Image 1 (tube, rainbow, N blue to C red):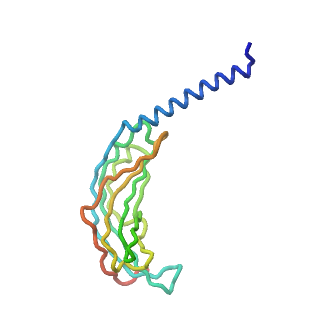
Image 2 (image 1 turned 120 degrees about the vertical axis):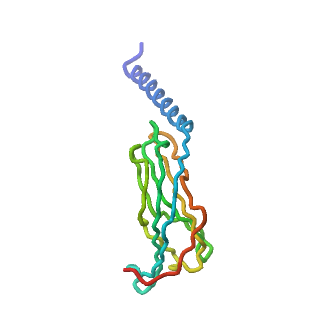
Image 3 (image 1 turned 180 degrees about the vertical axis):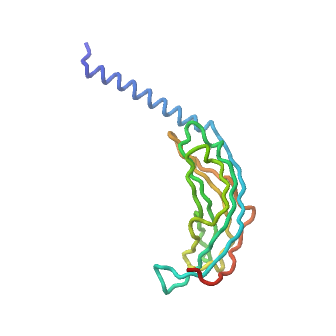
Length: 178
């Protein structure tokens, strides 16, 4: 005869095995639902200004402000395993020292399918600064709208919804901004 502890152990082992198999099936099914949303990304204006930093008040830096237009639909990415999306606008450029930089200018977390249609015209959420302090001799920047699908169960998946057709040059810096 089995004791009560042996019976509880057998039942809990069966349930945990069933739950793990179910979770593995959910994670594997995420690979079957592939969606590739496409959208439009337009850089309306790009301005560079001289600025004094709070950290180093004696040092002049250049800050870039980007105004952009985004219109895309991420609703095909939402299924029963999608918890939320992380959508972000990214700028990639090479500075004067030859270092590749990737900077996030704007981001948004989309939690519901009803919020997945994005139509935004605004300035950047985060300022674009180069570590060298200047955008002089910097190669043109390529802008792209990317997303990250965060599932309830499974691996994160990344993708790109839009990209500027040609790299955009940084203009000469104007007078200071406070």
